Amino acid sequence: MKNNIIEIVSFLIQRLLVDGEVFMEEEIVMELLELGYEIKDIDEAFELIYNGTEIIEAENVLPAKSREFELYNRVLSNAEKLYLPIDIQGLLIKVIFSGILSIDESEEIIKRLIQTSYHENLSNLSLWDIIEEVVVDQYKLYLLLNEISEFKDIVPDAYRYLN
Image (tube, rainbow, N blue to C red):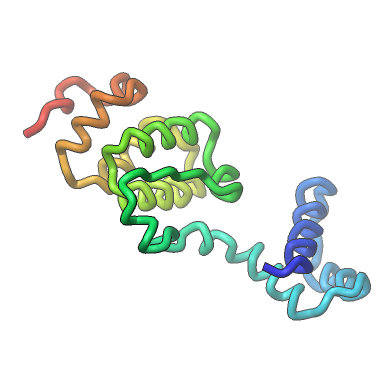
């Protein structure tokens, strides 16, 4: 990504978060043009701000070659960290590093967690609900329940056994 676009996005975020200004897009565009930025870069920065979640939701974010490795060392991006509370981040990392889920399942869970965060406050239960939606293998669910202590408190004993 070009440096100018990053500077423009930083400028926009500064205006929104720090200054708390509600701004008219036309005013900001004029101000950025006066600062010497090109209209093409300004458009790309606005596109990134308005449609930035598409970057997070992109499927298959890992190259095919890295999917061949058995060890999956996933680090949450800064954008993902903005959407996920710190306790959910920790629990998610614990789930991923348990080695029980596949890479595709883990990525789908991250994507759905971020999408869910738009509409509700995330909790351990909402993470578990998403895991149950994504993971179809009942044995993997059983292993997660037994390995991760945070799930033991929220899932009733009656549902801990394989059918």
